[in-house]
Length: 240
Image (cartoon, rainbow, N blue to C red):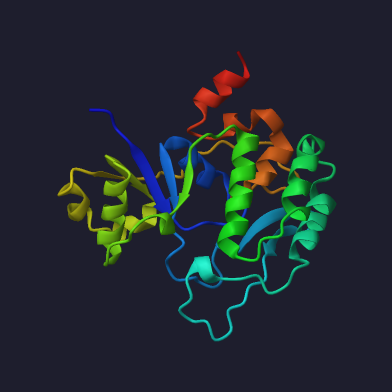
């Protein structure tokens, strides 16, 4: 019997390299944006490096009075965010070794973005960065499926609907995950290990791993897969 590996997780805005490592490692990646939007999280923001330290790029969203809204229902509150974020990236990475290699593609992701829902914005950037990294894993939304009731039951049911044999989750989920519910359906649960990433030549030291993957691309170019864990096949393909 062939194995099928799946991740089900909330979408993030221009995530760090570990997020893309998890996309590359599995056969299908489901964006779980039916769940509640959380403030001060990674859904609408991420960090870049600047000469003055790390800086947040945050997409302004409508949250006032919307305490229980889902991520998929969260809308942008200010249309000029994309232009501002692109200017910040240019200002801080224009002198990075490989910035020009990705400049046109990243600029188009920003200045061509007309989406008003956060989920669709995140999807746009995930797809675009996947192309840059050579990732071919399909991305799907949880709302494309009939969802069961119950937190764990819903995840198990999603796995069953896509024929998953292996479910992958972040290490924090280990504290509350009901693994038995998956095991009863013959689905094995795995947890990511985010330790042991190699450092690369990063502008504006000291080095930090917890920034957007764009930092890795701008600083290392086509060698970016060398600094990730699940990209051996892509690295070999690029260097045949």
